[in-house]
Image 1: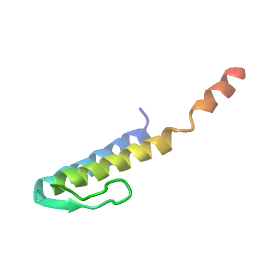
Image 2: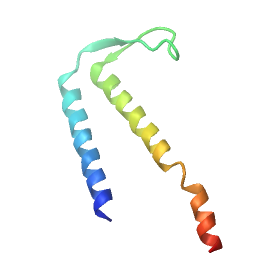
Image 3: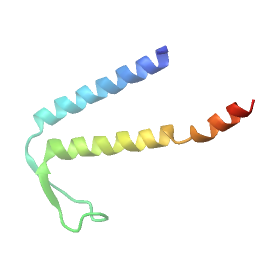
Length: 79
């Protein structure tokens, strides 16, 4: 493991700790509106909505970051 990977992992864990601390403080029920996908508001715990938005961001970032590795292996194999 190189230093860059270690510090990225450490940063991710610090962000995750912040998410956990925020979700333990915000336990009230809220109405979440997103008219593009949900026809009527969803009433849920603020902690759940916050964590869901964080998870969508992490998954989106992972897909964008790791999407271009497929073509590199073929060009290395030819050399």
